[in-house]
Length: 349
Image (cartoon, rainbow, N blue to C red; front, top):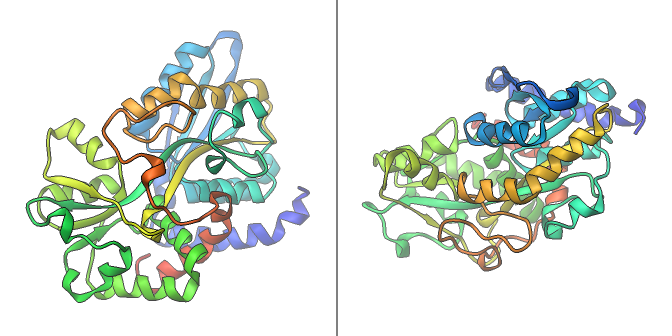
């Protein structure tokens, strides 16, 4: 897409960047790491919205197995998407590895991603890839209400996330409003219920005096300590914390009936059209969607593998059993800026 045609998108994302900066997320992007000596001198710059502690071991395996150096810039997915739009065709990155489909959609809409090979796209179900073939999912993550089992039983939890605006939940809920996954959930609610209903929901949460945290892991740790009774997070964080701490009194509750609180989002990856290392970049995407990457996400990060024929390593509700809302993940990008605007309006950013 010519630079002039990206003008409206860049202006929208300028607003997104201002909101991100207002809550200090720009400073979260400063962590770079470089790889070792790759065979043939190939190297890639990866903008990673996935947390370093989650994916650095996998990226190190890629370097060793493929002989390709990686320079990784870690940060928030929405902020990195805004950075890519500002950089435009002069983007330093070869690959964008995002925590959520919404941020990938923003970059794809700007014309900055190149189409991936069908052989890669067809590895995963159509719900976890771009309609235009511009990005592909690497793992699935379900939104849940995690709860402290010392305070609540499964039957105490509601069928809809909207119920957490009721007065009985005042002071008992926690979530990370500056986290991309939570923002994508809000974007999904806008897609299914509109901005007015989403604003009312967020206002109801604020009225219930929630605890807010930096990320999903902090929410789960607060649940385990009994600071809060319920946390709105991605499903796999209780397993991440248990891997470090041992068993904790926290379980996941899945919403039903196509509720927006049951959104199944995808982490994913796209190749920048401006990359001068197309072969190496495609090798990176193939690795993440191939056996090594998919087994890592299943066994090490406890997410849903998205490649056909693979299952999670822990006992989870299967993806086809989750009654998620009817949301095209490719459309989340255009809802991201309105989501941030609403979060700011109600005082959560």
